[in-house]
Length: 390
Ligand SMILES: Cc1cc2nc3c(=O)[nH]c(=O)nc-3n(C[C@H](O)[C@H](O)[C@H](O)COP(=O)(O)OP(=O)(O)OC[C@H]3O[C@@H](n4cnc5c(N)ncnc54)[C@H](O)[C@@H]3O)c2cc1C
Image: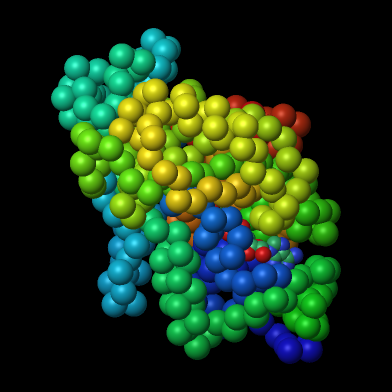
C-alpha cells in the first residue's frame, strides 16, 4: 500500500466510518480507504445494545435518529439481507414533574420534524405495558416506529456494502499512527505503510480524542464504561415482542433480546481507557442495579443471565455528535454515545459536508467543534445516558 493515493482516507471502521465511506462513494468520491486497527465493526459498534430511536430531545437527535432508522432499512433492501432492525415501539420514561413537563414539550419538536411521538400518562402506560411498575413514573413519550438494531447484523450489513463498492479499499489490523498535512492533502502513516489522501476522516469512536490529538485538534470524547446484561428469558406478563423502555433519570433501558430481555446500565464514572477489552465488569454495581430494575420490571426477577459485558461508550460532554472539519481537509465524526441510533445519518451528513459543504437540517451549533471552545456548550441532549463528563 506504500504511497497509495486516495481521495479520502477514513480512520476507524466502526458504524460511523463505514457509513461515511458509503456516503462518500455514493456522492462520487473516487478512491476511498478505510483503515481500522482491529476489525470492521469490532469496536463499540458490535458491543452496543443497538437501541435506535428518533425520540431525541434536540433537533439534531431527532433528525439523526429519524434518518438512521430509514437508512438501516434501505441498506437491508439493498443487500437483500435482514436489515437487523426490529420495530418495537419505545417509551421514554419521565420520573420527576420537571422531566414530565420537559418530555411532554418534546412531543411538538419531534412532530415538527416528522416523527410520531405521543405523551402517555401512567394510567394508559399501565394498560399498555403492564409489566412495568408505572407508579414510579409520571408518564412517557412513545414512538411506535422506534426499536433496535441487532449490532452484529448492522455491522455486517454496512461492512458488506462497502466491501462490495469498487471505489473503497478496506484495511483491517491497520492502525493509523501518524497524520500530517501536506500540499493538497494529508499523509497518513499506518502500520502497513504510508497513504496519501486529499481528505481524511477521523472516526475512532471512544479513541477519537487520541486520534484528533495527533493533528493538534481538541476533541473532547472519552470512553465511559457501560454494562449490558442479557436475560435468557422473561416471566409471565412480559409477552414478546414487548416495547422498549428507557428510564432516563435512572440510566437504564430494557429491550427484547432473543428469548429474553437486554438491559443496559450506566452511571457517572470517568474512564481513562478506550480499550474494549480493558474494561472490567463491576459485578457489585451490576447486581445492585439489576435489583432496582427487577423491582420496576418484575418479570425479569429470577431469570437466568445469559450474557454480561462492559465496553466503552464514546461520550461527548453534551451527548451530541461531532460532524465537522477540524482542519483543512481533516474531518471528524463522533457519535456522542449514540452511534448506533445516529451512525448511518452521521456518516451521510459527514459525506455531504465533505462533498457539498452542507449540513442539511442539522444545526451547526449542535454538531460543530466550535461549541467546545471557550465553554460554549449551551445545549445538552437530554434523552441520553448518564455521561461521565456531564
Ligand atoms: C455497551 C455499549 C452499549 C451501547 N448501546 C448503544 C445503543 O443502544 N444505542 C446507540 O445509539 N449507541 C450505543 N452505544 C454507543 C455506540 O456503540 C457508539 O456510539 C458507536 O458504535 C460509535 O461508532 P464509531 O464508529 O464511532 O466507533 P467504534 O465502533 O468504536 O469504531 C471506531 C473504530 O476506530 C478504530 N480505531 C481507533 N483508533 C484507530 C487508529 N489509530 N487507527 C485505526 N483504527 C482506529 C477502532 O479499532 C474501532 O473499530 C453503546 C456503546 C457501548 C459500549
